[in-house]
Amino acid sequence: MLVVGLTGGIGSGKSSVASRLVDRGAVLVDADALVREVQAPGGPAFTPIVERFGRGVVAPDGTLDRQAIADVVFGNTEELAALNAIVHPLVAAGMAERLGELAETDEIVILDIPLLVESSRQSAAQYVIVVDTPEDVAVARLVEHRGFTEADARARMKNQASRRARLDRASFVVDNSGTPADLDAEVARCWAWLQTL
Ligand code: ADP
Image (cartoon, rainbow, N blue to C red):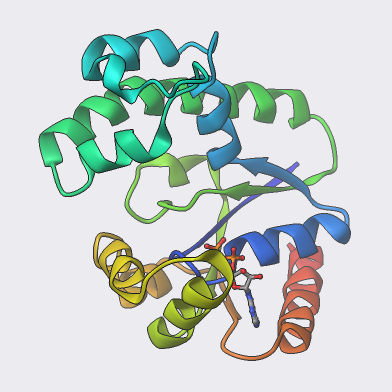
């Protein structure tokens, strides 16, 4: 097993790179998917979150209202720390379990971790792929394809590690400033690099 972290700012194209790597044969361990899993009704984070943040974060259908939680923690260090203290250990345990299952295989395992640079979870990854996209290009894509307002996209970016901090951690940089076809070529280059490790 080779474990490689994948990170990038919001709208950089991280998910697009992850799915292209999976198409080529990589195994994806997706932190966001694990977060959703532990927060689902019946998941281990559900009750602790409701106890900490109140019934107001439960949607009418009984699932957690991600937007309501985001509204509480966004820009509030204390509330965010409380949420992370519940969710992060459970996600880390889920990741460790998945990696344990893959440990004896020859798989190339991609750890998709949005906040890789900000968190301490990079320890499992032997190398780090950074998807790098100019901020204005990422904002334009978030507005066009994902329904963000420009102000919201920029606010989220400001809350993340800087482009420079991320690039400083990179073992390999995927440039996603171009077209989807350009990204295909960048991912081909990345896949070739992965074969050399
Ligand atoms: P992230 O996972 O980093 O937030 P996504 O992979 O979801 O980013 O990309 C953000 C949006 O931009 C998506 O709608 C995606 O389809 C689109 N996108 C990604 N790369 C490109 C590109 N090179 N050209 C045009 N649109 C792109």
